[in-house]
Image (cartoon, rainbow, N blue to C red; front, side):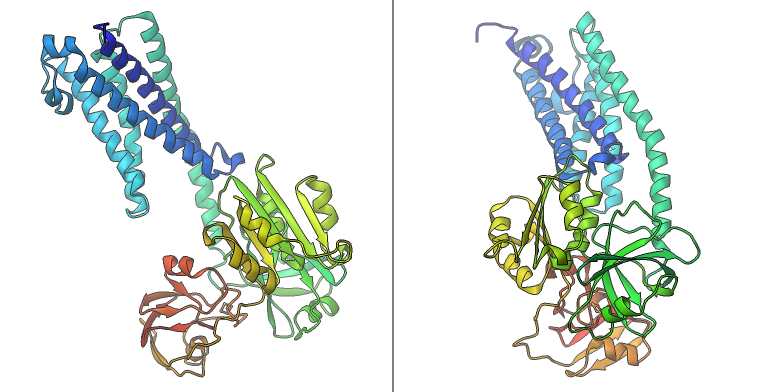
Length: 505
Ligand code: FES
C-alpha cells in the first residue's frame, strides 16, 4: 500500500455508500409500510430488497469503522482506536459528532436484530424498534455533517442535501400516507369483523348463470342492498339452504367487487340434496342465509405462482388470479373432462393469453403430468381439485411450495384406533367424548356454543383453539403444521393424542 491516504478514501467512500443505502432502506420501508407499492401487492422480493439494502448498509458501515481504525493519520495524530470507535465520547477528535455516529451504529444493529427475531418477538416490539430507523438516519445525518474531514466540499454538500431531503420526504410520506392507510385498514378490519364468527347474512339470488355443462353460477346480493363483507382470494361461503342443508362453495370473481358474492355450483351425480336443490329449486329473487366468508386457502405473496385446477376446483383459483397485478408471474394448468364441462375456460384463455394451459380429456390423449410439472417448477403451487390430483401433488411437491384446497376430505382415519378423550372448555364445562362420537357432536349436544357445517373436516367452520393437550389432526382444512402454528383444531373429525384436551372458541 503506497498511498498513505488509501484508508481515508475507503472511509469516505464507505461512509457515503452506507448513508445512501441507509436512506434507500428507510425510503423503501416507507413505501412498503404505507402500501404505496400496493399494486405490486407487497410480494416477497420487495421485502427481500428492503432486507438486502439494510444488510448492505450495515456491512458498509462496518467497512467505514474498520477503515477509520486502519487510517494511519487518525491513529498517529489523534490516537483514534477501538475504544474511540465504539464508546461514545471516548475520542477527543470531534467527540459529539463521533458519539452520534456510534449511537446510530448500535441502534442500527438493534433494528437489524429485531428484524432477524421478528418471528419470536411480539410484533409491537418489532414495530417500535423499526421506528428507531428514523432516529438512525437523523443521527447519521448529524454525524456525517460534522465528523468528516471533507464536509465543506461542494460534492459532499450536494450528496448530503439530497440524502437529507430524501429522508425528510420519507418521514412526510410515512405520516401522511401512513395515517390514511391506517384509517383504511381500521375500516377494513371493522368491515371484516361484521359479521362476527358465525353471524349469517341474508342474500337474494340476483342472477343464475349457466357456466358450463352441469355448472350453475349464482350471484348473491345482500338483501339490504349494502356491500358484501370483505373477503380474500381463496375464501368460501357456507349456504344455508331452505331445505335445511348447508353447503360450502368457493367464492369466484374479483374480491374487490363487493356488490355480490359469486359462486359456481356443480351438480353432483351423488347429490344428497345440496347441489340438486341449488340447480333445480333455488330461483332468482329467493332469499337465503349465508355464513361469513372463511379462508383456509390464503394466497401468500410470492414471485411466481403455478395454479392447478381440476374441474370445478377452478372457482377458488379465479379469485386468486383476479387479485394479482398484471405484472406478476403466474400460469394456470386447467384440467377437465371436456371444455363443455369446464367453467370459465374461454374467459380465462381470452383474458390471459399465453398463461393458461387447458387439458380437456376428450381432446388430448393421455394424462397431463401436472404433478411432475409442479415438482420441477420453482413457483408456489396453488391447487384445487379432485382427491386423486391433490394426493399426487402432495406426494410430488415439497410442502413449503404446495397450497391445496380439498373439497373431498382425505382419508386420514384409516388404521387409527380412536380413543375416548376428556374435553375441557373454560367457562363452559367438561365433557367425556366416547370413541364412537365426534368431539363436535358431544359439545353440541351438551349445549356448548360451537358450530359445524360440513362435518367432514373440509370447511373449517368448527374451528376451536387448543389451550392444552395434543390434538390428532384428521381434517383436510389446512396442513397440520399451519394448524399447530395457529393453535387450532377441527373437532368434527379430529381427535386427541393426549387423554385430555382443553379447547376454547
Ligand atoms: S364442520 Fe367443517 S371442518 Fe368441521
